[in-house]
Image 1: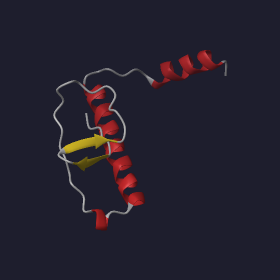
Image 2 (image 1 turned 180 degrees about the horizontal axis):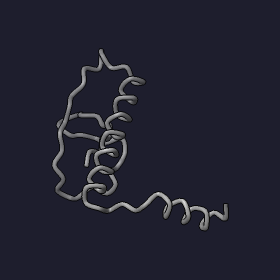
Image 3 (image 1 turned 45 degrees about the horizontal axis):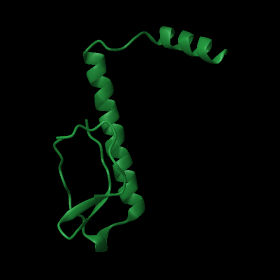
Length: 85
């Protein structure tokens, strides 16, 4: 699983802009320090969105390979019943 969360490094501490959800207490992390003079906030947000999309696709492929999927017809029928459509 890849989960990207923004934060700020200050006084030897990393302050996250949001708390991670569904992350274990001893999860492995990678840190990337960005040069503030070269950051475009819009492009950074787009990159984070792309990374999260790639992670979601990877998770879907893992579920597919582990036979944790169901036929689309079953899903459509369930949604039709659930939402009365």
